Image 1 (spheres, rainbow, N blue to C red):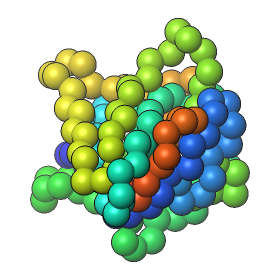
Image 2 (cartoon, rainbow, N blue to C red):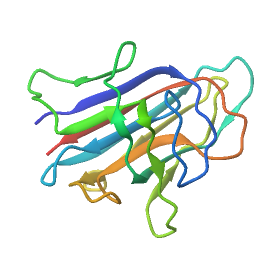
Image 3 (tube, rainbow, N blue to C red):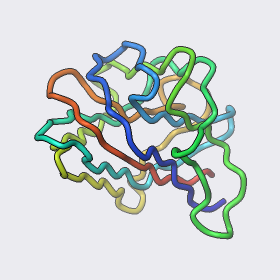
Image 4 (cartoon, rainbow, N blue to C red):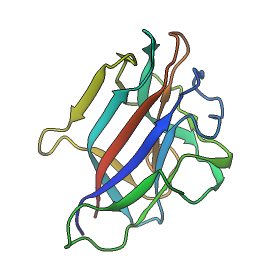
Length: 167
């Protein structure tokens, strides 16, 4: 289908506990659109834009509750194909919703800790071949994930992108 990039140009995350609805404009969420659709997350990049030292305890994790009534992306945020061979997506990507998604609390579910100093710091997670983050179907525990700030730290302005491929 072709790789896509879901980008959030600039935002300040809000430190939020697991199993708590995320506040619009403070996260990136990606979900499968149907029971047979799947996505592979290949890369996550975060870049600090804060004007002073600020620790962002960022987590990419599965969501126990999806966002309700996701708001369509608007500039400067984007989700588009990376090359001319891409086609339409089977993903829903958003940074705002009527009620935001909630990270899963289960200790048995995968989470990526992507903490960094938002005062110019960067984080780039790239999956090794065959070790991509999978999102599939409509069962809540595996069909959606979000990049958001966990409690603690002193969150600062940042930008990020998620590279994924529908299959």
